[in-house]
Length: 170
Length: 156
Image (cartoon, rainbow over all chains, first blue to last red; front, side, top):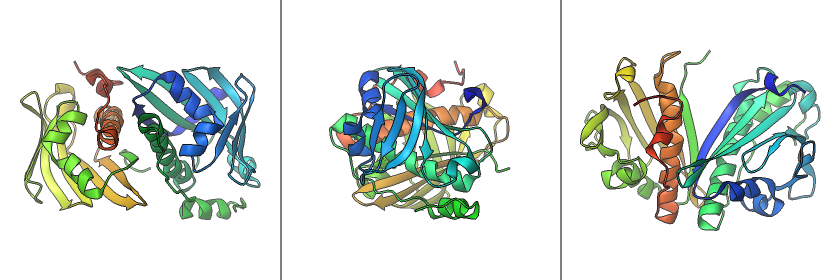
């Protein structure tokens, strides 16, 4: 897979009163992610080529992928493939890159969702709805010690667009 | 092809009323908006100004005001020469209760293709709104240098 063929179609930047090491841990550990990511657990083998899984609260693998760039605590790129039948076959792989930088006494976290082809806004709305909720929760957890419950459902326009492409959704 | 715009969504543990106050009170804005103070009586048609260090950096007028749900104003940059030629843009704040939280959506549009202003705005809003969220949730803003606002835009 050629990483440079993947273009960022959704970018979200957030500043957090924390350290790069703590932001890295919050992004890559199951214990943290369950708190800010609606009970979903990030399970990552911490090495280049390692596996990357986001496990749903029911134990199923909601997202599966692989680690493509691994430079703790600065940069992480993983493939982020939602396990819905035919999704990857029809949309190609999704890459997610986190960049973590110091900005004064805060940390700037930039998430880029990248694709190797044009993807319609209706489908991208899934990430555009989800990322602000996930990363707002992560910021609150690191700054205040508790994560708010932000209940998210897949946007109707995304489900309709996927269905129109013959992709089965729950 | 849709026109270039900037959209940012954040979830804040607060009330719509407190968030409205934080967006419209200069006491609040100078804490999280890197020293900038908003000036307006927030009535539709009234002037809006953003002041930094005693100088108006941006100005416009109130287009919509429905506290604590919706606020929009026009926004024209006055300070940096490189940005003064850009067209008048528009900022829309939408405040919605979301469970125990509030969802804030900021839309900034009215840019031209290839203009410099969108880049400056895209770097500024995440830093400003991250500070706003921190201020409302933990009573303290972030210590981010003002230069964070200019990342990707070389304003002196």
